[in-house]
Image 1 (cartoon, rainbow, N blue to C red):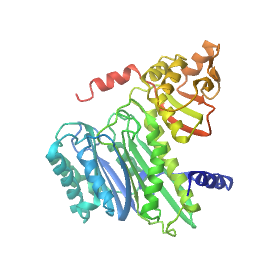
Image 2: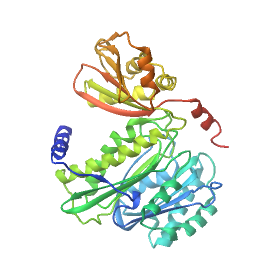
Image 3: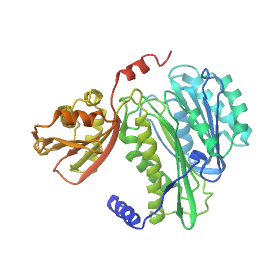
Image 4: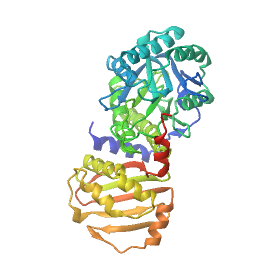
Length: 425
């Protein structure tokens, strides 16, 4: 099924008032999923171990960092998912990335999986592992194994249990990041829950972060993989905080089929409904990551219209949202639209600069800065007032075609330097 057909199908569902409702519950909201979070001693006084568990084996899909240097848990998870293992649990530690830790790091990852598997009566190949925190420091494996032993007993399926897990994966995050939605397929209630962490080292390709999605939908492995990877490309891969891609990026989905809907085996209306709900979950988490960006004071949306293709529009969006000069201009509340155009120019996308228009919005007010390649005289006071707001939209309009894309990012502030200047210590 081609992209246009999918979009048309979604528009038809919109017309039918398809209801996708946000509900309480986070990652435990889908049937059969349990979670918890606990302080085990990697960090001084904050929760640092999370566990997610499905009552029955689940199919899995994942998208991982494109950094050549990959943490040991990333290599472990990639192998399990590529081999189509049935997954039943995930164990996640924060405070230590278990990255660049040599053979010991690989062995420690396996020990983490085996430790949880032994308590849950699973095989170690049914347990995914994730780590986040400082790079290049050996994982305190004895603390972690003792922590797993003391934490798995706390697993529960309440919204509080979901929040404990979401809190335990945080590093420099200032808020928990979680969501759950509910919708109907085949007369059955379907739920998708998710949690994420991310605040710094956030950059498209993919965004630096951890995110875990659970769902009780009954769907084929191939279609779960297709929907998930396309959704990641439209959400996490369209955000940027600071331009750094980490060693530990992982976004993972588990689908355990416990809703008992008729299995989705083709790209029909049921598939489109699921994909729309999945996009809602992933987009929400991606945007919250940006809003919680280290030192961020502005949430910036970049909307490119009229590019030769969707892919060209994405390239332009990413170039604008990742430009440090654009980010610092927003932090300084300076309507320096020349930096936006310059970022477009070096993006590699093909367009005619004489046809470009640039606008700024903040919800209540808007201002046009450039019209079809020509700079405009504009009200500097109005521009300043727009840029004072916490949420700002940049609209870049080309006249090359129908390509359109949206990206999300933040400004670059003094606090970003302060936070990262002393992160390890």
